[in-house]
Image (cartoon, rainbow, N blue to C red; front, side, top):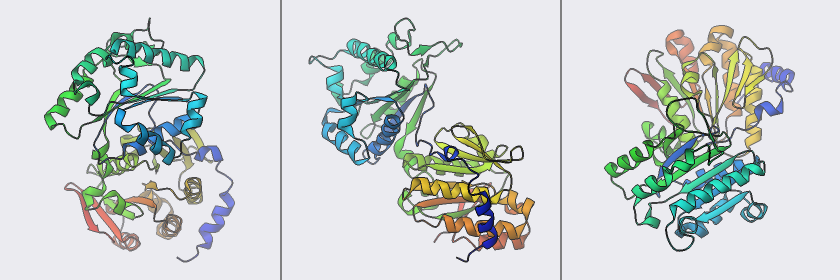
Length: 417
């Protein structure tokens, strides 16, 4: 790749302009405070990779973690937590990590006792709050409900829907939502209930999730780990392993629902515990589609700022058309994440072509591709060809060996390397 002195000199000018805290890595699969999520999985999904990321981020940021798991996974859980970078013994000694099998929690005396399990859960949360932890992260992996002989109905009616969970007089974790329905947990709580649906029929899964959904927890969301692992790559004839490292040009028709393709890519990255960074504008369809996802870090081009400005934990404003700052932000992200897999989405090419012209945009793109050359960095560049002359379109396409299109017919592969 040829050196690009114009871009490099501009980067030197701006290299100290982005404060380190602005580029602090965002947590992957982080929940918004107060959320409760139902997660379904099978043996094909690496659930421990997901759970470990959730736990590790919490422990590193001052949270307490409560983790229930199927009895047969006692040694696996501890080994996997260690493998994914968690000092299990140290965290347990300090009281920040509490691990327990389902039988230990629900049958402490050899007899199923949902009433006592609810009381113990509420007491543990209250104790964690008194100790001034930032949050409580609660994972209840009920497996296939074999610990109660598959009787999930009783689990839901006698435990999940126990009125004490949503009674402010009993649980200080409940707050008044100001609405006629639903309970909202105090922002200190983030909860996962995980279910192994491998041996369930589709109808059984539907009935199970419907029963959970009939609860009063208005902040509950549903996630299928297996569905998202290859959600984008499958649509272009690949799997996630073969997708990682590609630099892809996606030509889109602005009248289509092309945002679905980007949404699919971000969900796949999250399911594989890979951080996602999206460069776009606040008025874009992409931002409108993804703005509520806390695991995505946004860099929004803006005419209202002259310096990088952090407006929230997951959002940074960058001066519009400032290519050196965009490159600097990209470089610092890569430095922060070392050799790990990272996913980028650049929804800025058409805007740059219109405002600064073909030559400068191509210089920027050459430099960006040079920075993103790692085989662990996956990048999607969006481009609206209808807004530009054919010669411009052709020059950009020549830079990519992986090309897709999205129009009224949906996503189609032009070529892949």
